[in-house]
Length: 276
Length: 94
Image (cartoon, rainbow over all chains, first blue to last red):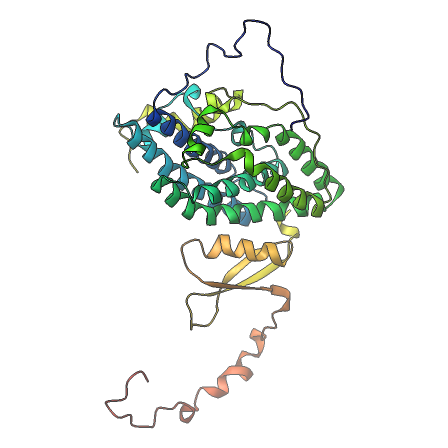
């Protein structure tokens, strides 16, 4: 990714826009923001995968995708409940999931990308789960005991997600002409969202230095090795690096996230007292 | 697409010491994916600790038309059951 030139800003420009989220000013604020990132990644991808329910290529694949979705939503519940505790304003995981607007979400761009066809969904899953597995392996050693406990449980789930996605990427890549073309297209679509996963912004560096967060930049070399191994077996080409797309961690999102939230948040916002 | 995938019979061992038991079937393109489909379909509520999948085409089944010849002759052979022994009261787990 480092091969791309940075964007030159004109003199006097800060690179920050009117919709940029303010950087957290307290340690608790940084931790809250970090927990939103962890929780929102899992929540949004879980919701995306849930869209396949009833539409997957077979009933077995339907269940595979729903199982992954439920694992992810379970992780989100832990991280967002804890985020609510750290924030101390009486919000729980549900309040954070269903009563925040799009600019307040801190997930990466990769997870909010549309499902596309099954190949595109599997490309996203491989690229995300491979990263999330390394992340949680690192977070198992977090100085924050809640984060380390959730990571320890979740890493087993995510290992399975990564293996399943790799199996499908290999079969579709090394399959028919059509499956190969679709798999390559799916990878090409998702590839530009990978650099964001390894972006060390100030908050990430702050928490990594305190042993609470992970040094995500350090995970990149291992990630590339793992992805390359799968692509080699799938006989797929590693996509060309494009200009990275960043900003999800600061509240900038693609147009897709708002639509996803409409569906996800509609019911609890319209019927706040609904239970089931 | 799914109708092109062969069928696999799924067997689950629910806990150590018990035998694998037939629980159903899944469609899958190959053995590895069949195992994953079996895991995702039949062990998502902690039903098992071990899985087998077998191509359904490899199962050799008896013909229902032969039921009478196959199974009826066993019906009146009560002496094949070990029920004619008296078991001492202090022997348990029999």
